Image (cartoon, rainbow, N blue to C red; front, side, top):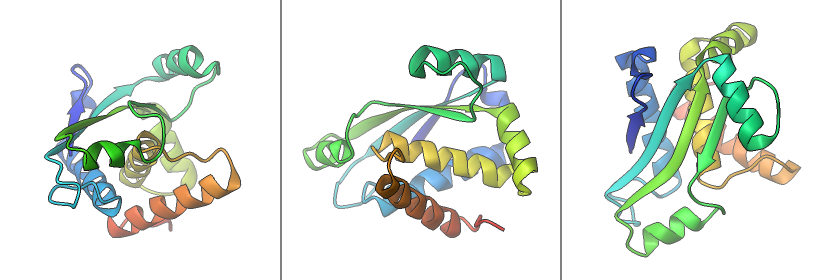
Length: 164
């Protein structure tokens, strides 16, 4: 997976966090059958990652979701339905841009403290959660929520970042 950190926000991420995002993305793609060398025979999956402050995420949330509030993360998928990415991969697309992930760093830090775990764990969770949205997962109903949470927990466990 290629993770492109938006110019101007790359200094918000140290090399350890960038490596964690890379590992999290690779684990998730492998679990979903979209990793390099998988049956899908893809050569690349790309995600754009941007870090913003609370004012910026509020504006994006208002503009794109009609919610005038600060949130932790937003996802902007290139594909509409779960399964669209798999379809594209199986039909020869060698590179797939999943979409954009926008993380509010101040909220990430605050939530890590509130939940009593590391900022590293919170960052990985928000990224995995967003990637699942980019892959078409949703948690609007009980069934979708259960499915999405199960995958999140599997990935976090493989990363050694389970809930404490």
